[in-house]
Image: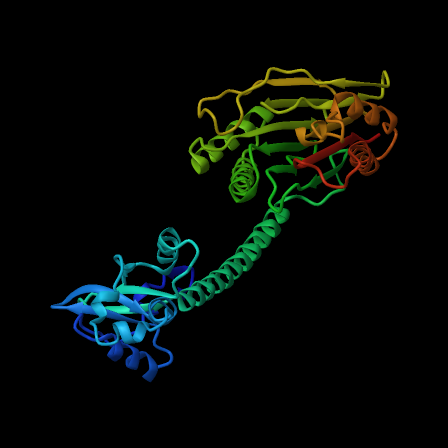
Amino acid sequence: MSVNGPHHTATLLQAIARDVRVITPATTVNQTIELFQQNSSLLALPVMEAGGLCGIISRRELFYSHLARPFARELFGRKSVNTLLGTDPLVLPGTMDISSALRQLMLCDPQLENDCFGVSLTDGTVAIAVVADLMMAISRSQADLLETLERLSSRIRNEVEMARQVQTALLPATPLHHAGVSVAAGLVNSTEISGDFYDVFPLDEHRLGLLVADVTGHGVQAGLVTTAAKAGLQILLKHESLTPAKILGGINRAILATTQGKLLMTALAAIIDRHNNTLTVSSAGHPYPYYWSKTDGECHMINMEPGFPLGFDESAEYHETTRAFTPGDRLLLFSDGIQEAENSHGEAFGERQLQDTLRREAGSTPVALRDALLADARRFCDQEHFEDDVTLVVAMREA
């Protein structure tokens, strides 16, 4: 096989064909025997007349079949070799690739009883292909292919690693503190490139924005969508009157421009306002968040009107829900990877487990609560890795 970068040209049969002497049907058996005895590597002789192939006489057929009988040479020696020719021999075109030639050979001679076969060349002559040569050529071509695939695989691994590093760089470092809010976040990838995404972004001295998103799928395409979401958010942050609904609407347009409706992203945007002691949230088909209220010591789900996933409809509108968020309250945003994580019995971690951990760790810091949620999910599943990406963002209103 000829290899040139990622492109491959299949080896043709004519490349391994051996040019051999051609005899005529009038050649005697004795003369044919002498030709084989003069050249120990000669395996077959094409028999041609007036430019046409009459047959092929092989060394094996001649010595181990025709001449193996008693007095065979005395009987056939002076006769023409034409008398020994059998049925039509296998002759394959020289322009056939070696893999196709092997398939054809196995159809005609599944036991590989013949050690060679004919090859018709473009100039009208016939050469001989040795089965052993064919096998060696195929072996070399497979080795070349494996080497090429390894090079490609190495390049792809490097490119995926670079993409993973770029994607990781898009995520803000936590824990962080702003506008009286403490935040800790974490993302556990199920593959090298995640379909999950989160962001934490100050809006002004009193407001802090949060975003959690989940692309339908994994891999490079999902990574492109999260990059588009980050880029769209950065453009939106230049506007002063930003709201959760406007955040989702702007990212929706950025994703549509990137994917043209081929990939979707669920997302939830939130803004915590220290000045007004409020939390405003908006959903684009994303799991509803939980909050723990210091006032009643209970864990609640924030119900809201869901919107279409991002990347579905350019004219989609997103609704907002606002509630009190006072000192001591906790907010949990997450992707569905943690709820849907299953144990060996097929049982999902689910809402109840998530809320139980939130209640138990309500007095903890955001970092401790994040770590406890991941630890409980791993303990429940009895494994370190999850089948889907898992993203958590924990926010606490400081006193």
